Image 1 (cartoon, rainbow, N blue to C red):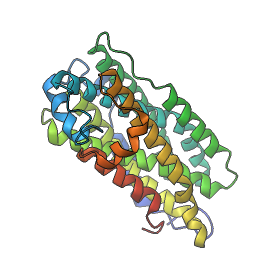
Image 2 (tube, helix red, strand yellow):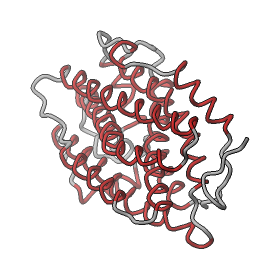
Image 3 (cartoon, rainbow, N blue to C red):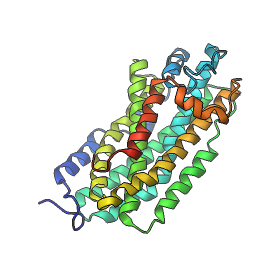
Length: 300
């Protein structure tokens, strides 16, 4: 029998939930044992990632950045996105736990449990990934993550005090959905550029994408069930727009910091130009995703 979350809500498909639960058992991973942490990503592989990933690509600012600098930049970039994704998932776990109250059905609550467990594993994996890459850069200054940590902590705290349940749930899952899609893009880009499956960076993004594909299905279902009525349906995306812009600014500001550490004469004042001008396919795809996430029709 189809279970309904609330009056007027879209019915839950129990078959989808049952499938998601089965896949969380059969196609998930444990980072400590299922990733070969003795493997590394080679300098040649990092160099290949640079033109596909770098904010500086095609802007002219990296004209004097040699191969060693590009390799270092690519390493920092991987740490930057891993740190951001892990912190978002860590600080968002409390918001995910509130999803238990949306539906008393056992398959729904079971999947919320899988979701939380997997995000906990992801945080541990990304923390370990950042440490592993940093260990291969002796003498380099550590990536600054305090700003990202504080920003994400207060973002989810702010969501938690919103008095309207549907708005609270919608904002939570919009941010998770955004991060999940970005990291699936990361996996697809790395898989295209680094065919060696044992490369550590490739292992990390592939493992993450395995779970995130399921999370996106669940996100879409719950977002639809909690869609606000009529003209208010735009409100979550309208509120998400400045938040996504701020998160993007924080991530890319770290890349400006990275560039300055490597001797590139660039500052935060150049960031709007860099965002408009970068030719890196990964960056162009992420910036397009921000527009779609915050501006597309809620019914789409």
